[in-house]
Length: 128
Ligand SMILES: [Zn+2]
Image (cartoon, rainbow, N blue to C red; front, side, top):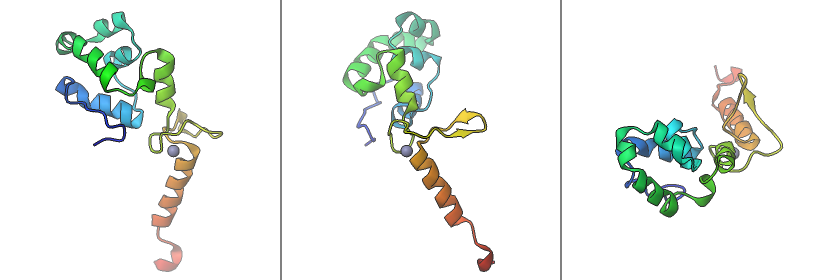
């Protein structure tokens, strides 16, 4: 059971983790999966390995029947999905977190909560 109740079992075995990471956690997929999700036929074939070329019909069935409709179909939809918070799946709010020059995968709320957890886990001077 996954957050989005997606069945990945029809996909080529070596692609299931990447597909799941993208849908469940908005992790950027590799060039083949990115092109498939963006609905770019030519790029999809250009980046497909031999297993994925054989599986192109499977990919179209999986997108139509399993993948959430908002997560694929155009570059804009894929970009919007990649922006979702990896934890709470909210759209980025008023706050964009930049860590080491990279935009964090977390929304401001989850980022602040993570910092609070770190501070709570850190022993205070009194406890030493
Ligand atoms: Zn969040």
